[in-house]
Image 1 (cartoon, rainbow, N blue to C red):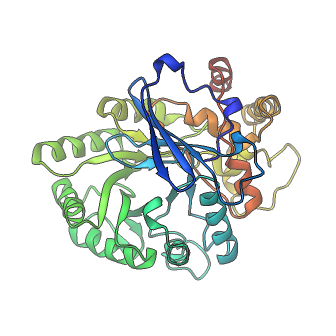
Image 2: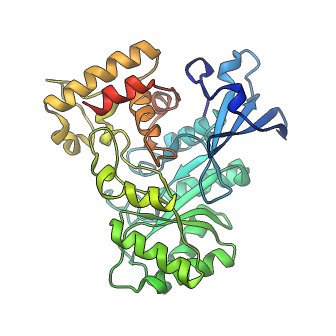
Image 3: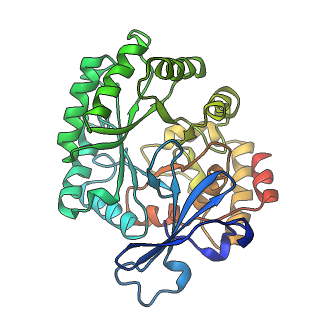
Amino acid sequence: MLLDVKNLRLCNVEACTGRFLRAGLGSWALKIHLGQVPLSLVLTWLPGSEGRSLHQKVSIMINLANTDLQISPLCLGGNVFGWTADVTNSEAVLSHFVDNGGNFIDTADMYSQWGNGHVGGESESIIGNWLKTRGDRSSLVIATKVAKMDKRRGLSAHNICAACEESLQRLQTDYIDLYYAHEDDPKTPIEETLGAFDSLVREGKVRFIAASNFMAPRLQESLDIAKKAGLVGYVAAQDHYNLLERDYETFLRPTLSKNLLSQLPYFGLARGFLTGKYRPGQKVNSVRSGGVAGYQNTRGWNLLTKLDELAQQHQTTVSAVALAWLRAQPTVAAPIASARNLEQLKEILPVVELSAGELQTLSNC
């Protein structure tokens, strides 16, 4: 992500360890550690950036715990591709995201089967066609999921392997960087599920696996079985978490903390409510508007007022402030947010740092 260094205080020089490494044509990388958290600060001269100031050329990458994946601090959600974002807008969003320092893209085999006339796989297909044209697969981290597509339900070994092959074909790639179990499947033995994932990793079709929408006891059981059986285990989780949805902190975060897993939360902007486009008495024309009705109350409006104030103080967008709070929460590696056009993308791209007091103020809302 393009990082405004005026708003980021990484650490004291004395607390940094690392060295400069040549990261490729037009870029330099400084690998550092913030306590136990490894980061890669990358100075990148992006194409056409000659006229930009230095802070417009700095990007930061985060090492996803338990992996060698270097991810941008924003994960671009692909749930809108082929749905509210047509092919042209989807490809424009993908290209602008990557051209401006992003490298982490999230999708699922089921996206967007809920659309009129859709069957699933639309998002993966758009990303795959874009990938083929772009031709820099190794610089990107692609995540997709299995278990919720209507024709590929569950986590049986057969279904996982078949779904993976279909996702690889749609994505037009040889491997998936992060492959999620999109939801738990109590009907399938955990050993069978993990055995299938383990085979895909050994075959080189998947690099790492993660879990989404699991209850804490089942996630812990899966981690314990993987360790005991010597099978590949989940390295991260993806769950519903944002300023207005905080159940994760009580019911799942302790399990992730205990096992040193990272959280990559979805609906980081509360289905668009935390972008600031919803205001009292104003009607918003959006397919997601029905999903934010529960936020349009005193708590939600008060939170937006505080986000407005902080956005003005930091000279950034409401979306960027909401994502900054989420990014700063324990266990969170990078929030997921989607954009159906360039205008929306530019609202979520800025990476800012909030003070401890600002974070607490938002937490108290």
